[in-house]
Length: 166
Image (cartoon, rainbow, N blue to C red; front, side):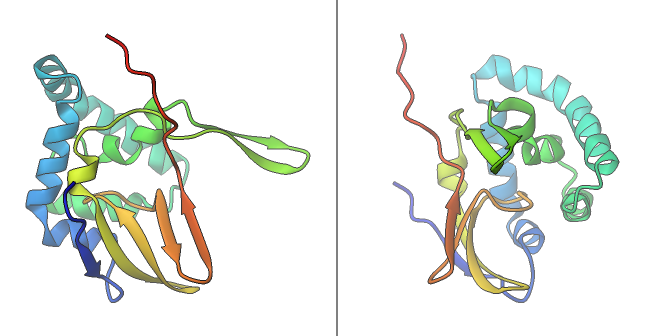
């Protein structure tokens, strides 16, 4: 298992982390393009620019609060796939939340293996309106899939055990 770096970004943001570590950002995007081997790498080179345009348009139309942060990282590192990677959960996973009479109900969570996430995971100490917290993240990811603030909260989108086939 790779050690997970722990970095203090309380005076900045996850966007600054991606800007400070472009080699990790490029490494993650390269690993995700190779999810299914050489064929997916070739398909990604052809389809990621389209995926980025569709994703950016969706973020803009919905007034997504992370769009400015993703725009900032993409402007500094124009690597195809950054917009699409940020919405890979929305585009590709079968996760879902449904409104019920009791409130929002989580129906399913992150359920696809994603090569490279483990090696590129970083613990960033950040500061938000409610205080300091730790965000387990990847370079270029806006928002948070998992994080914690000791004594206040811990939250994660987890992957259920998967059957091995073949």
